[in-house]
Amino acid sequence: MVVAADVSDEADVERMFATVVKRYGTMHILINNAGIQSGAPFRDMTLSQWRKVMDVNLDGQFLCARSAVREFRRRGLQPEISAALGKIICMSSVHQRIPWAFETNYAASKGGISLLMKSLAQEVAGDRIRVNAVAPGAIRTPINREAWETPEAEKRLLDLIPYGRIGEPADIANAVLFLASDFSDYMTGSTMFIDGGMTLYPGFRGEG
Image: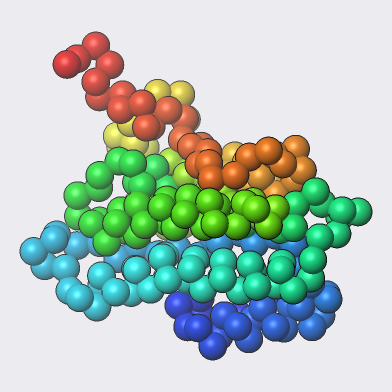
């Protein structure tokens, strides 16, 4: 089932959740996956560019997580379904840790997601709601096509990835599947970096 919604719009998010609950009776898992980029040199970045990225990347995660928490609590525990009352998986980025010039709004939004996730996890753990994050590195998706679509661009990108390959969507899906399952039932407030070692700062290998 597909429900179109603008995750930066409070009323639209509430309508989306109400539509899903009406169809299926409840929900058990939220994957906060909406995200955009709108980069520019900092001196040229407009307030509109800043707000657009924050509205989708950070406000959207807040609004969707809030609706999910409300539904989990309304429904109550269903031990035949899961040991947890509910699971929230926030899609972050290696740029919650790695600064990114010319993409300040994007990096700031992902840094915000990190502490949103941790603070929410701390708050709702007693309700058996688990909140974790996945931080992808370079994944072969349309949002970063320019970074890998030519041999030259791919070589520059691979210099940043010690493991020697670009990530595929399935690499992220497998991490999300683990966090959505009861295999990770004792895990909350954590970020899984799925990045081929990008956060190891390979530029320092043999240097410094």
